[in-house]
Amino acid sequence: MDCIEISNSTKQLLITKAVIEKGEINTACINGLRMRDVAAINIVIEDANLSDLEIKYAQLGGAYIHDIGLPPAGHPYYDPNAEQRPLRFENCDLHGSTITNCDLSMINIIDCNTTGLTINGISVDDLLKAYKG
Image 1 (tube, rainbow, N blue to C red):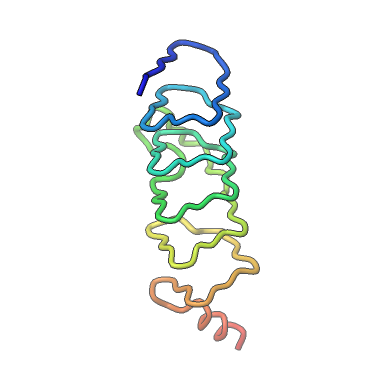
Image 2: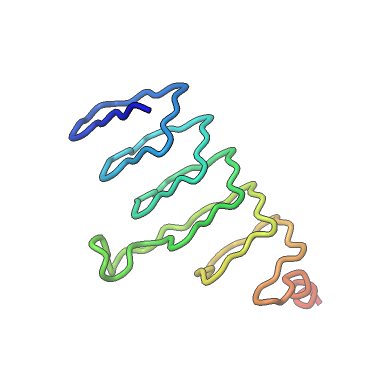
């Protein structure tokens, strides 16, 4: 497979019906990039600012999302006064998923199927039944 290298450039790319497997994008600005009808299996995004990212009509089975939030102390972009903006999940099938060691403070769960949902092994349905009396 041929390798095309673009370096120190301000080009706008339009890529259609192409195979660009195992490529790399390093130290780049891709603001406003749109990807539609793509296979992106096993991609890794790390040390990235994905503020206002929208993922729509995507299959994320097996995805591993971790270490998400503002840069920690010691990171070059750490700002002790910055506050994490909230995330929004809508119409997502998260059944069977696991959330571990996450800050879930101030989360609102609205109109969701909570059948089988547990928090630290305690059934949320049982908690709601007990709360409602």
